[in-house]
Image 1 (cartoon, rainbow, N blue to C red):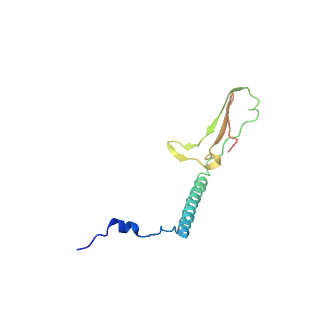
Image 2: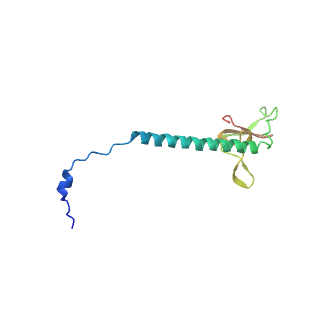
Image 3: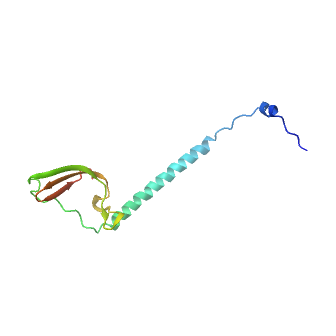
Amino acid sequence: MTTLTPLYLLAAEKKSAEVTDWSARIAWVIGLLLFIALVYWLMRQGWKWRASLQSDLPGLAATPEGFADDETLLTLEGRYHASTTAGQWLDRIVAHGLGTRSRAELRLTARGLDVVRPGA
């Protein structure tokens, strides 16, 4: 039969707190940061790969000459988010800077709509 140690004897024992292993903690933090950097690098490579696949798409049309001289019917400012392929709303177009989100300024005249993206 085993004897149980009284609780007051267990409480009387002197124990030191466990010491934090700083080298292991720092190694884990550095490893986690390297993993996050690797994931971001892979995302960037995928973005560049998508741009190279879509490089055969025609460029955007330039604003015709004399368009700025026309009377402005309506002006709007907003945010451009992305362009996608028809029927596939998750397939973003990256070529020609269409994948970057930016401010957009829309100007409607009698000849058409002019879209200016100053931040792209």
